[in-house]
Image (tube, rainbow, N blue to C red; front, side, top):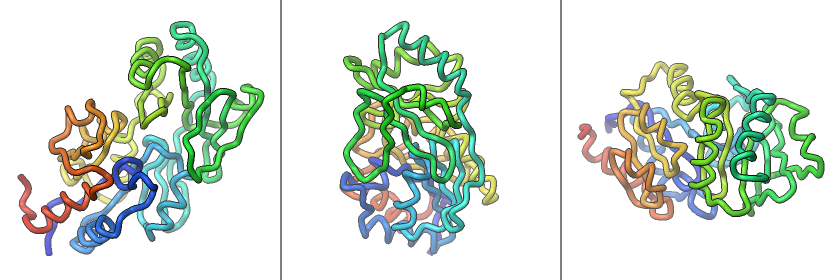
Length: 271
């Protein structure tokens, strides 16, 4: 059996994971088939390593993963952080003050760097329900006491799209602002994206953008689609990602990744 791509890059939430945070047997089997055919699989997620590791372990995933919106390259088999880029905390503080000057007070959370980095949650920040650990802080100053990968922002009135747009207009020359999921708007180091992290991981495997098939569902996947040879958006994807995708597949609930991989395994010549 042959497969026409050497690298399959998959986002996690809303893409590889179903809404109950599991991966279906069908999708597991499809990924196993493409890796058996010689392709590498790299998970590319906005989650930092501490919020990703348990999923990779459950999958029996032993390869490289790109975490923290590209900030971290993690070796799942060795439980080792290979690269990590942190956010300049002084610059982040300046960016937050500029955003708040435009839209008013924000609720904040932050992801600390490292294999055991906690997610700090400030007053008023709405954490999505689930098994992911978070450390609540009463004093916002606690957020700045250790290196960070990212800062999360929420607004009491603006929706995700409006907040992302307002933040980019205010601080787009200082930091990156991305929408990574419902209620998840993030401030990152300028120039950082899933594409930069994926390119680093691919290079370690001797692979290139032209070798890559990518799957995603949110606007933070747009740079990855721009880098990869072929970008596939899930049926449940944000309209901004669908607009730049080469193809739209079924939803994460309906094994959209497996649908594409199975078809390519049957007809491996690229379109």
